[in-house]
Image (cartoon, rainbow, N blue to C red; front, side, top):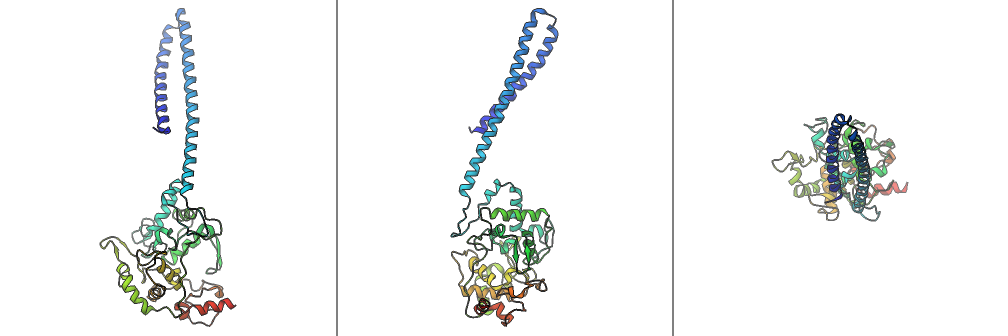
Length: 380
C-alpha cells in the first residue's frame, strides 16, 4: 500500500469519526434539553460538552496534519516525477543528433492538452481541414503536415521542428521581414497545403505552437541541433535528370504514391492515403519542397518507406534525379511570385524563378548543375 492509499484510508476513517460525532452531537443536544433541569446531571453534561469540544479539536488537528502531510507527499512525488522526466529527457549536445522526447512526457507539461491537440493536427491535418474536416472542411489539399514533416515533425533529418522555438522569430529573406512562428505555420498552410491560413488566435494555432515549443524543450536559444531540418546532398556535376528520375520513381516510389503520383490508400481499402506528389492535390510551386535541394535531401534521408538518414536506400544521383522528376510534374502555380524574395540577391541557388543577380538560366537554377551558381555568389 503506497502513501496515497494510506492517506485515503485515513481520510475515510476521519469521515466515519466525523459522521459519528455529528450523530452523537445531535443525540447529546436532545438529551441535554431533557436533563438540564436535573442538578445532579449538570456536571456530567458539562463533562460531556468538554469531551465533545476536545473531539472537535482533535478532528481539526488531525485534518490539519493530514492536509500538510498530503501536501508534502504531493510535493515529493512531483519532485520525483521531475527527476524521472529529467533523466529520460534528451540532453542537448551540438555533436550528437537530437532525438525528440517521447510523446508520453508531454503529459507532464502544463500545456499537455494543447500539445496533444497540436500533435494530432500535424499528424492528421486532413481530419480537421480536409474535404470532411472537423474544424474547417475543404480548405487544404490532400496532404497532412506530416507528409512533409515526418513523424509529426519529430524525425531527425525528416524536416522536423526541433529548432523552431530556438530560432524564431527570425528575419527571413523570402519575405524580407521578421517572421513569427504563426507566420511560418501559415506559410505552410498556404504553400505546402495550398490552402487557407489559420486564425493566429485560434486554439488550433496555439496548439501547433505549443507542440513545436515542447519538441524543442532543452534546445538553447539560437541553437540548431544536429538532425534539424533536412540533410544536404552533395552536388552533381551535371543537371538532375527527370528522365533518369522517372526510372527511380517507377522502381522505388510508385508502389506507395501510385504510377500517376496521386497517392494510394493505406491499407489498399483504407480511407487514409500516401500523399500525392504532384497535381492539384499536392504542394504548390511556392512550397519549400519545390526547391530541388530540399526535395533531394528529403528523399535521400527518408524515402522509400523504411529508409533513414543512417540507412538510406537511394544514391545521391537517384535522390537528385527523382526529385527532378517529381518537381517536373504539373502542380498548382506559385501564388507569391510578386512578393517573394524582395531582395533578389538573396534568392537561394535552386530557386527556379527569375529574375536573378546572375546570368545563369532558370533551368540551371532548377535542375543544376548548382556548383557554378554557388561559386559565383561566394566570389561576390
